[in-house]
Image 1: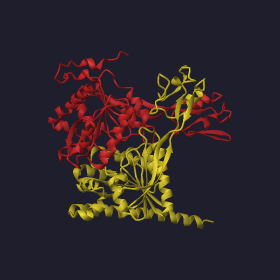
Image 2: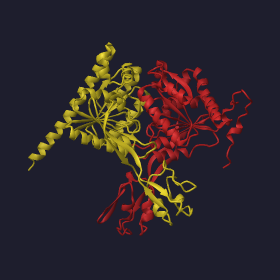
Image 3: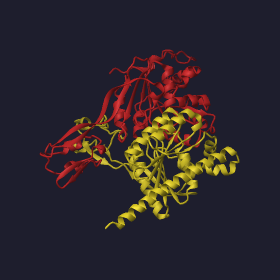
Length: 310
Length: 310
């Protein structure tokens, strides 16, 4: 695939901010993340996507995919996410137990007269089939989740993944979802909370991470964890301060000292909370915010250009 | 010994704030912070660490460059995309399945142990506590949650505590399941927002999947009373007792800023709002205690009955 020379899309003359009028030209994957849950990732992701209009929005919080509660799109199934689990042919099985002793997830157990399988523990690595000398193992897909997308023609392309209740493997659903990203257009990824494997799968595929936090002890602590994750992944990050006005200035002081840009402040306003509770993206009712959300992208581009030495 | 888990589906509903408040109301309880991704309970309870233990997660593949001849079989066989083009392993993708170790014709791949986190036992002003720190991007958070719970049980034995209070992680995936299995009661926290209701439904689906007695509570019920009514109706229809409606109150943030539980804070803050809030929490707690007692009595009866059976 031809690499798009990102730096050349900006024409800069001295003393001038980069020309960024054409937002479509910036091919960027932006993940909206946070260490702590409930800090406003979905709010930021949805409003940001609606402000930019012609973008893709991917809801990667497959355990609690909430973006569409605010978008209200009609969705159609795109793909069933499956995990390949072993099926043992008892006629061919020699009870050598290779498969059970190989499986690192305890998804196979060897009984004296039979091999028992526990599909819900299986990660689908295919190792059991590989080590079976009798070729008695076949792999069958087992559904673990679903990928859906907007059915109607919208300027906003929306995809989401859902992990079935009772299933444990969020990451394969996230990876399957990410395969639907159109690389030629900008995309916003709503990430799951935390800094474990699923969150890293989302942040790791992004060019930039927007960390949403609030300036409270919990918010700050979890923000630091998320920041540590972005640094481990070498993804640049900026901050959206949500419920600005509560707590103190600890996040701000830290960001100033570390040179982390604050991209946006969303005040602790009852109107915003109210709209959120109703499932209404607040830029719809408060259009003055549209420009502020658009500016996030401009700020991101300016800072990433600077760090690239453009 | 009884175990109570507090979960919410959605993050930021107030799980940790409520768990902390319960900790100052309960007598003789062990705390277990099972939100191992973003462990916030210690920020309020200021634990004194007794012991730290490493949690070994799934192992990590490692390719010996001396032995590797670049045949690419491992790259082809790995279903997690963890083998990179230059035949090194991406630790964030590797799930330790060991397929590469058996597939490699040169025996160049081995599994090396990796520390996925640390389990910590400590003492707080309200009693013993078990918590953990998950390494960034680690997969085994379900396993780490199990270890925290095991540690909590050990502490309960050691200090003869009758109750384990579990602060659960957000979501409905692996860590949440690990946090609720085998508990006697689950309290699901909700908030009157579209996401709050949606995630409550998913969380309740999960607890009924595991057949664990479940009760619910709405936090910040007054930010949208219509949604609160919807939640009430849902709880009624699904037979989930709704034990309390907590109002939106500044006391929660104020107490957090002071690193106190809302109960502690209400004692010296002197405002009527704080005292009122603390009273609602007290009532909620006594409701929960009654229910926990009921479950333990039931168990006692059934044990006695069994003992009488011929």
